[in-house]
Image (tube, rainbow, N blue to C red; front, side):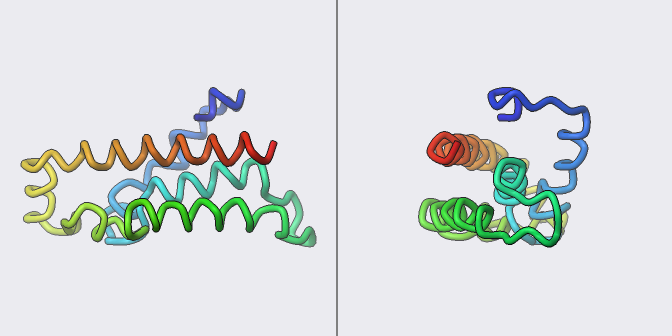
Length: 121
């Protein structure tokens, strides 16, 4: 997605590395959601703490509402129906090819974020 908006940085893969698995397999928010919020903030976020968040909140809220409607939750464990913090959950994830579900969620998320950016920019 960053390439399509002409943003290049060697830091981009690094800063997203801990998002996978519901924040490093802690049963938290889906990494695609966190990455989407970060991407939206790159365009709508503020540069100084004194600047109001009025420009940032609407596109992020729009995305989160869409995600919850589309997938039913923003929680990783709920989305994939397995607990990646356990050996059993990791086994289920691998044997059930749940990575395909994650890839689909991520792909749809990227598309939705790009749509929101195209609407606002």
